[in-house]
Length: 562
Image (cartoon, rainbow, N blue to C red):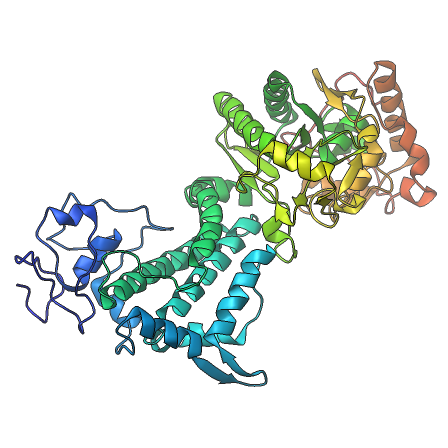
């Protein structure tokens, strides 16, 4: 029998588990424990939960199967359970537990008395609403700060708060892909701690009620909460936590030559072409191909217009379920071509009321060597025979994605019956009301991309206007500006200092004429959209010899800079 003062020695008596404050009697064990000497005290709790063992433990049974931790390899020592398991208990049966959870109230200014039952209903309504965040709640904060005290009467309320907080942390990582890596890892670390606390408290509750399995939930929507957490967790475990090198590279991507850029674009065109999907360059990539027929092009006075660093494309699919399959096929194709990784993400902002009702419509694919390259794929739904494509919709008030379980036939029936709504203020097409005319895309035209040709939308400007964002100026796409470009890039600095002169405009017009003569789309139709003020950017600096940095275009691929 284990000494009372010890919690980490093997118990040689298989019939009894020594209690800690009477709370660990009848503690459920993991299958790995059943054939071994049972573990005493909180160490048995660690084994039962599949949590990592404290460093230095000599009595660790090798056959205990551990679950994958929620985030980092967090070491949880038995002594830490003291911090959140209640010191006293005010219930001994399921009936008493339910009574406390229904009747427990708190006086809060200025809202007056608030009950745990009110909180339970609020959380249930939140999950039904499909919104991203539950918002400020005085009772949520009260339970969080006094969770050890509340758990002595209604541990189910504390379990619910822990689930909400874990979700909040994962949503933050999921929606803020530009955050520094250390912020992501800090969020994962805290989520891992809370996950351990949840599991310990849940197992403690079963022990107190002397139940062999899971404690009754009594109407608390814990299962619904964990389903939401799992949705983020499944995406983030591989796509963020295991990609430290990728995140470090993304923070400082470094230069890339035109040759390497177009090599990566060739990979993308080959993979997407083999899949037979509808796709076309968008945003900065489209502007570069329309203006130069390549990523960059020379101007006068030694200037080079380097338009783009990443590859941006739009990809159309018949429905939301088809996108899941296509995204996996794109990943497989690029991995076979030497790319490093891909991951999906929702384009909805954290603050959006529809945050949790949107699908993961974006696909990011990353190649680190020989130079960093990011592919940004925005998917759209072709849908029925209507005139528009769209990105996000809800049918019968619910999200339409791979996690809903709705069949394409059920979604099509809901759409035909008018029970689907396109979300107009969310996603890459939000500046166009969430929609883009199919006539702006089809019939697909051709763009030159250095040594290859790629499909392009039939009305490029309309697609660009539908995707206007902070880094893109759709008013005058024919002429280069510094808006949205890397502020410390040598060519951005040169353009800001020197501005454009009429000779640059002549070069660009001539280049467009050559592209058109070759049967490719160009900026030809859009020069007239530019005002006189756009034609001459900041004061012209005196001509000066300029070294050509590695990666910038020294020629224009035969389209002429004369």
